[in-house]
Structure formats: structure tokens, C-alpha cells
Image (cartoon, rainbow, N blue to C red; front, side, top):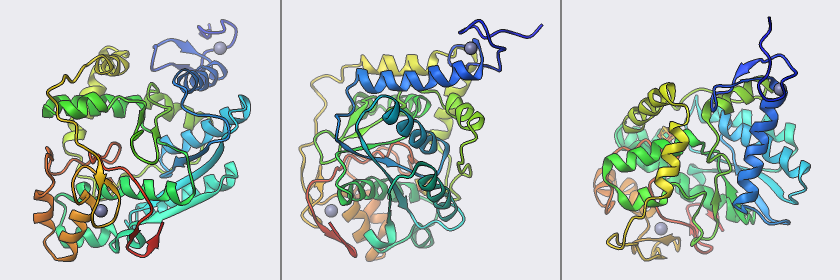
Length: 346
Ligand code: SF4
Ligand code: ZN
Ligand code: ZN
């Protein structure tokens, strides 16, 4: 006898829903998946009608599903948002060049304007060139710092009010664990915020904060969305990889573990002893920074002088030397005002 969907009690069940382990048909799965994200958006008042929202698009599953769901919900519920795709080209041959092709296909599918900003134009270096210079140690530190700024600069270029990223519940739970294991209380308190960078120019929102990675993959697969699934060739898969494995193991025995970790971290009060860095303006590029010179400028100066390793050491308060933190760069700097950096003017 066919198993029946436990949500509608009518249709044949097609899958077991990862978040609840309940049998569900595809129609009900699509509905609960989209409605939960809509609920997250509305209950956290992520957007206001008329806002320009840049969707950080890498061509991977998270950002592809994000573009699809944001477009769908924007139409269905009349959010009144002006949506854009924003991509960063790190200059990694055989990885980013291919994934950007997927973003271009998505641009056609969803009929959204696309802006691509590149490390080469912004900083004068591609990641391929940086890795040639510094090797495969610390490459993700450079990449994380540069990407954060590049996204802010791209969002400023298109006049965006908000930037949305595809960080999902698994990513956030991993980051909570990593910060806990590093004893990084300041970031532990901050990393579960659904909106970050409110003190900067472009707030960043995470509509997938409570969305499980497995459900994103199922949604993309059954909806036949076009996404790019190869990992970066320079990924060292270090500390985050261990946190990821731990989360996956916990999820096996207790599916709610992912969202429980997030809820626990939301309740953590970092206390008064943590020194919150005062925001100031980078004396080199004018970007908002926690120090006199922003991290991107410190790293760039090291690269240009052939002293990249020394520049890494200057990262005050940096706990991890190679954080591989593609999802949640640990850098705190946020954009502040128009500057000139590299060849692009903002
Ligand atoms: Fe950049 Fe991510 Fe590749 Fe590291 S793994 S070099 S952060 S794209
Ligand atoms: Zn159903
Ligand atoms: Zn700077």
C-alpha cells in the first residue's frame, strides 16, 4: 500500500522531510518550504516595500534556491522588492568561471539584473595569483576578507538597500560551534543574527536562517533548478569541515539539533566584558573598519610588497589562521562611504 503524505493525508508521499522525518508529498513539501521562509521574512521584518535587494549569487545550490524563492515570494506576496543578482568573481579558473556561467543562466531564468564584481578589478589580484604568491595556507583568510568587502562594494554600486545571502541553518549551526570551540564569545553572540551589518552601509539578511541544507538540496533537485555543485579547488576543508561533520552526525540522531543549536546561541548573552570594536574609517581606502587600516588594505599591502604572511599576522584578534570561512567570513569590516580602490570607483 502506498504511503500517504502526513501533511495533506491525501497524496502519495514522495519523500521523508529532513527537518521533521515525516512522510510528505512534493506539493506539500514545496509549500512548507516556501511558507517557512516567508514566515522568517515577515516575522523578522527583513524588507520594506520598494527596497532594492541584492541577492548574493554564486551559482551554488543555496543562492540558486534563494533567487528562485525570493522571486516566487516577492510575486506571491507582493513584497514590492526590486531584486538583483550580485556575484563576486574571485578569479579561480575551473571553479568560479564555471559557476558564474550558472549565475548567468539564472539571470535569464528569473529575468533579474546581474552585477559581477571581481577581485582583479577591485584589488588588482585574482585568487589564482594570490595562491601562486602565498601557497595554500591562509588563502581563505584573504578570500573571506576580500569577498565581504567586494559584496558590500557591489551592493553599493547597484544602490541596494539590503543584501541577502544563502546562509542556511547548517552553516549557521556550524559557525556557532566553531566560535564556541575557538572561545570566540564576541562572534558567538553575533553569528546568529538574522540581519548583520546594520551599523554599516548595507545590512545583510539571511532568509534561510532556519532552512535545512538537505531541504534546499531536495527543493533544488525536485524543482530541477540549475545549480553548480563543485567545491572550490583551494578549499582546505579544515576547521569548518570538522564542525560540519559533527553537525551532520548530530542531525542523524536528532534532526532538530541544527535548529536547537541556533536557538541556544540566540539566547546567549555575551556579557559586558567583551570589548565591542569601535567602527572607524580606513585611512587608506575609506571603508568602514574596526582598526585604523581595514583588513583588506592590510592584506593587500602585504601582497603588493611580497610580505603577505606578515600581513596575516597583523590581523589583530584573528583566532584562526586559515578559517576556510567561505560562508561566514570572520572579518567585521563593513562598507562606509564611496572610495577608490584598485581600478573601480564607487
Ligand atoms: Fe575562497 Fe572559499 Fe575557495 Fe577559500 S574555499 S579560496 S574562501 S572560494
Ligand atoms: Zn501532501
Ligand atoms: Zn581599507
